[in-house]
Length: 310
Length: 292
Image (cartoon, rainbow over all chains, first blue to last red; front, side, top):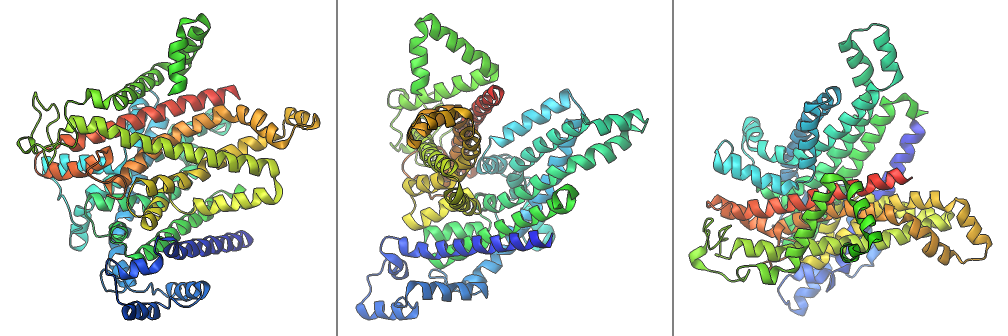
């Protein structure tokens, strides 16, 4: 287990190092190079250009600049935003809370709805199964932004049950304001999880150890709880973890549908305004979160299934 | 598309008719519905200049945010442009981008995969590590990074998504190619003195083709979703070009002002096309699985 953990951590460090190098190097692939961004639309006198070159150390060799940037980034200093004239890390930490709340809320919804629907469909053949399968196929084919827009039109504009935009104040307000966004973010993944759960429950139901338990005369509820659901949960947990990782990317879209002030909307705005320090920082944070969640999933998988740790 | 039309055109011959009826049977009723829907969408896309009742870019202030009427079945958008015409024209941008993405990623992914599987050893290890690193970045984030460099527009998004989809193609094809490579017929061809390139192109590729096609059809559905999502964010297709993703976005504004048909129409079309593509991909995958 320790060897595995160390190997995975080393792999993770390599991936993050390569990713950070690419993210930093991107600035130099842009037509016009970094100066095009730093100057924006101004044309700049030679003195101004020289001042900017000195301020951003543009005359240092590329690798030296990369190392400086990475060293600062590891310590949480991503430089300052050209548009907001503010520290990038300050910009991000204010918005990370909204994104984290949204992703957490959605995770809870996905697990509750997906596992419940999938288990139900797996245990009850016939109509329940057909309905769950049809609904989950429909949601799988629907892009999150379409779900979001439809929910806004029906529940916010039509019925007036929920606010249209904004993140809300305090925990209760947040929960209320983020309900539609969280549902939007979770429907597709919940459908996917329901499918996996259903298939997994079905597979366990057909196993010999279940047959044996039944023939020993154990109560059906006990058979299902101890023998079916417990074994069926292993793939479900893995898929849940991978789904949470994909929510990080999904939140970029959902935050823009509902005009939430999160990392995702900051990211999109930074791209439009060509605010490169922010783009680099958000990409690095998103990729790190994505990779970390994947690592945690792998660890859980190993811990849960003793066969895998050997 | 060409395969489909040749199949239809050749259906006068009895052999071709057998082929067509076999295809219908293996697709099942749902698969046939999906295929029919896609053919219909493709026809409307091609014939948009003839079928569309209005110029999609022509504003008409009397129709601004107008509801459904006999003259404008789906009403007008914020500038009064006819929504139905814009949906028809929008199919062109919405669907041609994903097709391009899938073509690019399939060609690059398959080439990488077969090269890795054939060469093995160091080449395989390097290709696999490269793919692992690409897997570490979610597809849509990768596309957004490309947009950040190249600027908003369809070119950056198509390139970014094509690169982001490559590892998924490569992973599937590589494992199949590894299996195929160890079969006796490959060794037989090698002993006969065929070059590695000839064996890969003449023997490996045709045997992998059904799998590659099934995989690309399924991926096409996700490409439609991702591209439309990025256009929705305002970073893909740029206005005034009509595009379903963009129309959902501008339709959201219209909906807050009482005209929800634009957003709902564009959203529904995306869902229908994606669902049809996914169903078709599933069927092709099952057929492929059944053959193995």
